[in-house]
Length: 238
Image (cartoon, rainbow, N blue to C red; front, side, top):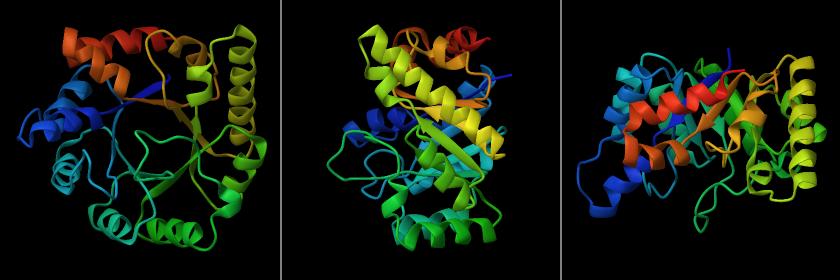
C-alpha cells in the first residue's frame, strides 16, 4: 500500500508568525498519525524559520510511525541529527532566500561533503534518502553514493499546466522510480502535491511513499487535520 508521510512544517510556520507556543506541530503530528499517516516529516532548516530543535526532539519521543528529518548539510544540523537519530534523514538542497525547496540535489556538484554526511548518518544507524530530480543520472548517482532511498522531486509535474507537459513530467517520474527499484532503492516522492494532482502520482506502483505537507495543512485550516489527512489518503488509494 502506498504510504503517506505528512509534513507538519507549516503548523510551525503559523506558530512562528506570532512567536507563540501554538499551534504545536507535535500535536499536529499525533493527529495525522491517528488519521492514518504512515510517517511524519519535518525540515529543520539552517535558519530555523519554522521547525525548531525542540519540535524534533519531542517528535522523536512521540512519533509512533516513522520520523523523517529533512535537512541540509550544515555542520550544526548534521550534528543535531546524529544526536536525535530520526528513522530517516532526507538530504535536501537549501538556500536561505528560497520560500521552499526549489529542486533536487545537484549530485554532480556535491563534492566531498555529501558522501561524508551520508557516511556519518549510516554510522549512527540512520537510513538516508536523497531528494533528487527525476532523471536516470540522478538515480544512478544516488545509488553510487550508497543512499537507501531517493525522494523524487515532483515540483515540475505539480506546476505544469499543459497536458503534454504534465504527461512528460509523469513519464520522467515513473521512469526514475522504475530505475530506482531496479537498483534496489526505496522510492519516495514529493513537492507540490495536492488534492488535485496526487492521483496520477499515486498510480506509479514503484513509489512507496508520498511526502505531502502544504496542501494538507492548508486544508486542515478548514476541515481539521485528521479529516484533511483522511481525504488525501482516500485520493491516494490505488
